[in-house]
Amino acid sequence: MGANLLPAHPKPRRFSSRGVVIALVSILAFAVVYGLVVREYEVEGGITTNDSTVTDPGFLAVAKPTDFDARTGTLTVTFEFDVTDPELLDDGDRLAEGIRVVIYAADGTHDLKFPEGEPIGNAEIDVGLAGQVYAYPLDTYAGFFALAVETYERQAGGINETTGTVTSALDVDTSISGWDIKATLMQEGEYPTAFLDLRRAFSTKAFAVVLVAMAISVVVLAFIAAVLTVTNRRRFEVALLTWNGALLFALPLLRNYLPGSPPIGAALDIYVYLWVFVFAVTSLVLMLIAWSQQRKADLLEEHAKLEGR
Image: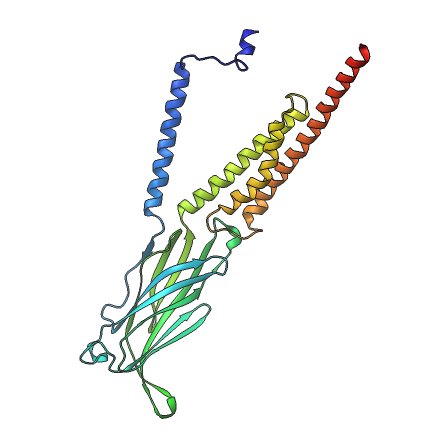
């Protein structure tokens, strides 16, 4: 009898050796997991690339990805150009000949012109990548861009006449937060080409998994409590009904915290989150049924006592 009363009537007591062991093991496990996550975070979001295949180019382009929109598959790239052939420059840093830079990408061609007598500049373009955002957080994207450089002269009537080609090299640098980028540089004939592969960083995947696991955990607990209550294994309490109702508002907010904000209807919703909502609503309905049943029993009992007087 006394043992059964302990959970309902707690009292101060020392930790047992078993409790100390469990606490130490839990702390150690958390420290290991924390260390692994921090280690992965420190090395993620970077870019890996091989060396350029051109050793002595006359023109160098460094592509720096600055942003990526997974919903539209658009990669924003800043190109920094540098003329390394002194014959293409005057006595200073201005062009002795007009230079035309053509960037070929999967979504089209981008034509950039730098007139004679002007300094070489930079350019920002959008490159389309192929991928499926609905596979979040395991979605991957792939694409490419190639570079062609030529000199030109502006003729009468505004016509630009090509006067030659320039040996060019392409490099890819920097990274985008939340994404791991792999760039493979190849020399496709006269055109240096960069093939890109993007995938979400480890912290993004881990954060998404943790949030989904949290949503599943609280809903499972709510469902278990509802089942115990509706089967009269536990007495109904108003706090349980409040908890179940609050879940219906908390779950959408929890989903909005997913990094990258995947669109509604992603695989994550179909396989997991939709069912989390279903079980949350089911728990609330079961709790209302339990309230109705137990409240009815209480009223009947009160009525029987009044009639027995």
